[in-house]
Structure formats: C-alpha cells, structure tokens
Length: 181
Image (cartoon, rainbow, N blue to C red; front, side, top):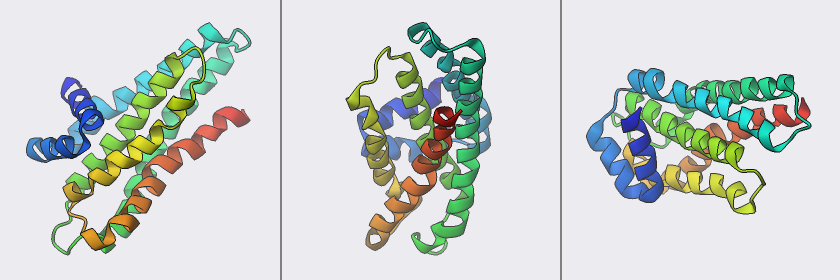
C-alpha cells in the first residue's frame, strides 16, 4: 500500500516523471488491485462517515448508505473502465505495443487518484470550489500517462477523451446515487 500511495503522490507532484517511474517499477496489476486499490476504495467509503461530524442531519443509515455507494461507485467504475479500454485501446496504440497489465495499472492509478480525492472531499467540513476542479487535474495526469500505454501522438486527443470518459465520468455518474438517495 505504501508503494501505491508513493506512486499516486509522485503522479500528483510530477505526472510525467511519475509515469516514467511507474514504467520502471512495472507493478503487478492483480497485486496492485487486491493489496492497494480495493483497500483505498474501502478507506474512501469509510471516510464517508466523517461527513456525519459536520452534518448532524445525516443519520447512521444515511452515512452507511453513502459509504456503500462510494465503494460500489469505485468498484464498478474499475470494471467499466476495463471494458471500455478493452474495446477501444487498440485504436490508439500501435499494434503489438498493447499491454493488458499496463492498461490495468493505468486504470488503477487513475481510480486511486479519484479515491484520494473522495477522501479529501469527505474530510473537509465545507465545500471548496478548488476541490471541485481537481478531477480536471486527474485528467491531466491521465493525459500525461498516454506514453506509458504507448499511445501515438496523432491519437492523443482521442485517447484523453477515452480515458476521461471511461475512468472519471463513471465515478461521478455513479456518485449521483448519493444525491438521489
């Protein structure tokens, strides 16, 4: 977990250099998911209970519901992103350069950044407009990660749209369940 958090913070501080370090480390995707990503999703879900300290109108049932939705939104978003990338990644990467392990790591790190963002949002007693724009920075980090996957320069813009649509958008669409319920 410490190595995963180190990779995430390195990506936040220097996206280009962070992706280069991820390429050098070559983390194993399955281990990254089970030992790091899923526990981070769990921490993001548990951090939903902190909101109850600031909003006395929320009952325990409401907070539990928020926590479950938070975990499920990240969990399902991972598999949505895997599915979308499996369908479309071949359009953006030169044939033979596609690595399923790298795609899984790319998705895991993108969702890990969003989970960290969810933890920050849950811990803040007020909504800050700056924090609402941080998913745009996650999009920049994903854009800088395109060379990690071997995306050609001509297809870079289309790839960024794919990455944002498959990693960031599902998290926030599924997060709307918190508002509905």
